[in-house]
Amino acid sequence: MKNKQLVIRKFSNEIHEAAVIIENSIPKLSSKEVLVKNMYIGINALYDRELYRGNVPYIQMKFPYVFGVESVGEVIAIGKQVKHLKKGDAVSTVKVGTAYQQYQVIPESEGISIPEATPEYLTLNPTGVSAYLALKKVAELKPKETIVVSAAAGGLGHIVVQLAKQKECHVIAICGTEQKVALLKTLNCCDRIINHRDEDVATILDTEYASKIDVGFDSVGRHIFDTFLKNLAPLGRLVISGIATEINEGKFQEIKAPRVYESIYWKGASVRCFMNHLFKEEHSEARNILYKQYENKELQIKVDTTIFTGIEAIMDASEYLLQGRSCGKVVVAL
Image (cartoon, rainbow, N blue to C red):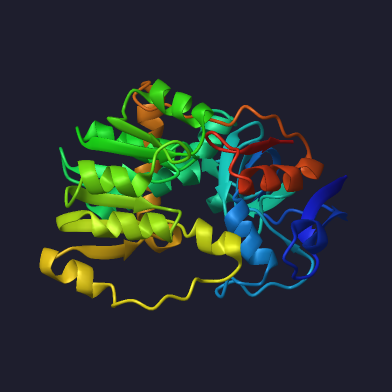
């Protein structure tokens, strides 16, 4: 049996130049390993692009390098000493350098049991986990605070706004198309939705929320970062969960301005960054909470409705996401 994989073969600015599909034999299982047939894989186009550009400092890759982070699938074979998983079990896997392939051989300890291998459970882990932990551990979001979220209709953002509303917060959601506005309205949790193509974000925040933002949750950067920072409330927290604009441009913008503390010192405000892997010990508890909320219909999970199927579709799905067209989590079915 052959395993079709999408691998990085060389560094390049373009995925079609950097990546290629290959086929390899599936390795023989050791006694404590399981073989998983991937059913759905999640697309993290911005992170992937930094990988195939060679810009992720903590990843030392050897070519060819299988990339992708999260998947859900079915256990189809187990080693002799596997104790907890069995054939037919649905599992979630989250590990850098693993997902973009049809099959995975993993230690039993890396297979996370889930009720079924669906795009929704794929979105909950790790994207939902990131939303939960970023708000709890980094934003330290408190009940009835005011929070503004950029890219609010994306895989991460649409969960952030719901979790914020669970704390009875005033939620401001920023997005860029009418389709995304419609998605956010279905969540019934946003007090103010700003389509940045129709309204100027800076003007709205300056006039309606001047010095009233307790938490800015930003994955865009540049002008959004500046606007959130300007309007932080006393003791406000600006959480950086991504820097999409900088990455899209290929380099960081160089600016001449006072250092950031000039604008936040007198407010006692702060700028903080979230990285999921730094909170690994918290993942299990976060997953259990989110799974329960989803199963109790307390949390909606939105998966982009555009259909991508097969390893061959990963590059198209990546470009689709980079073009800003996604509503919810972008997933490829295998």
